[in-house]
Length: 133
Image 1 (cartoon, rainbow, N blue to C red):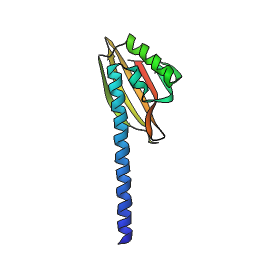
Image 2: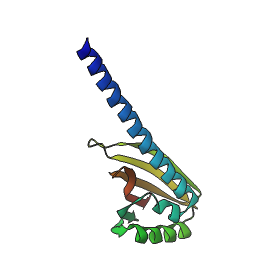
Image 3: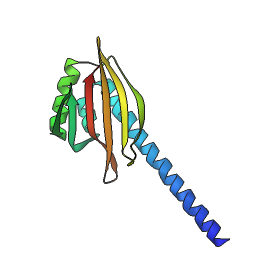
Image 4: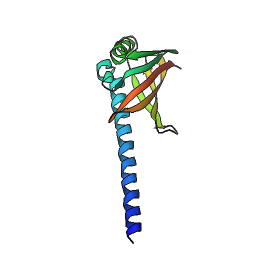
């Protein structure tokens, strides 16, 4: 009986950890979604890794967190958001969370892709792209 209780306890703990991880991923993605919707580069930078790969219109560059904030400030100024929605989110086979969204500005529509990475005990955006559809 002790083996069954220990096994049941272990399974329960693992399930709880998985649920907590999924909520943390969803929380970061929803927070990033709101900052992009608001066009706030300053708020978005709070969720960026110290270095982040940024792609805008098929031009990928690695930037520091501070540099990326300036890039997004310019992008949001030139392309203010009318609408931003997350279309799909999930995890890669290796467990890395990601999200795909659609950003609309005037007559332009951009596909947004972001990868989330765990750094210490935080979930941070490691890669983000805005590619015109």
